[in-house]
Length: 186
Image (tube, rainbow, N blue to C red):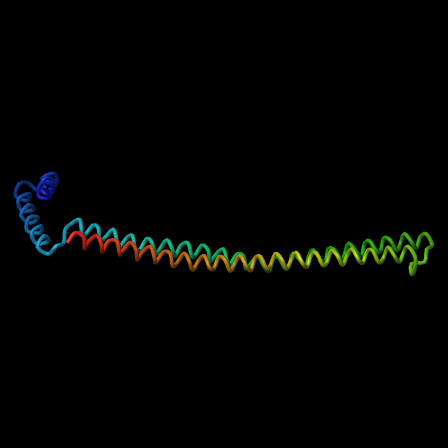
């Protein structure tokens, strides 16, 4: 079969009958040699496909691991951003409290009310209480978000390790399947 194909290809490309005869003889000798050693074209192709499959499986595992590592790095980078946003929120709350206290003080002072007791003092206490609640809530929100980002980064790193191990395992099982296939052929 191989002789016929090679002879036909040689004649197509201008080798003529002499080249076809030489190619056929060479192919017959090569086929006899490979048959005697137990290696065939199918075995070579299967071995090449196996090596490519192993390399591909390891490469896929490494690519997925790299993607997860990048996601973990992004989650870690977001932690500092969240800290800055928390500082900004708390600064804004303090500014709003100062503005509210200033406006109340001006209003009470304009009406001639003593700011050290009564309604003015109660309003001031309420403003401080609301600001403290806002600051506490902001701090809690920031800490919760940062802990979630830390956990997310940790999970991505674990997924990266699993992806690498999975790629290697897929490569090993592919190689083992090929070896079993060779053994079954005899």
